[in-house]
Amino acid sequence: LLVATDLTDDDARSVSSQLGCVRCSHPGDIAETKLGSASTIEERTLNGGRKYLLFRGVKGDASTLILRGTTEDECDGRSSSLSTIESYLSRIVDRPGLVAGGGAPEAE
Image (cartoon, rainbow, N blue to C red; front, side, top):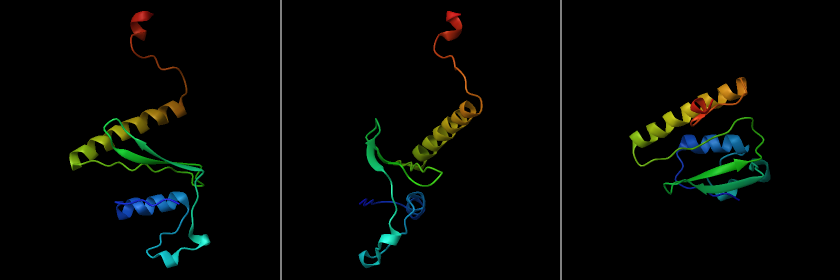
């Protein structure tokens, strides 16, 4: 059983969609047909002490990552970094290969 607090309405909608559950506003509304599933749910902590939930083994084809920050600028920076990472990952999937890094050009 997962109880998450301080979620925005959009975040709660996204999480419930990924887990395949129906959002309930009253404990009496909970029924087996409304429950979602995941093989594991982990709470992880980033270096800055921020926490996030990692869902594994969900039935959906997509994934959701909830970014949180203390200011709008902080959230915008994280969103920008995530977009850059997503771009790199999609390129790697489209064209797999070895990416040289560090001092690789100087070593050749």
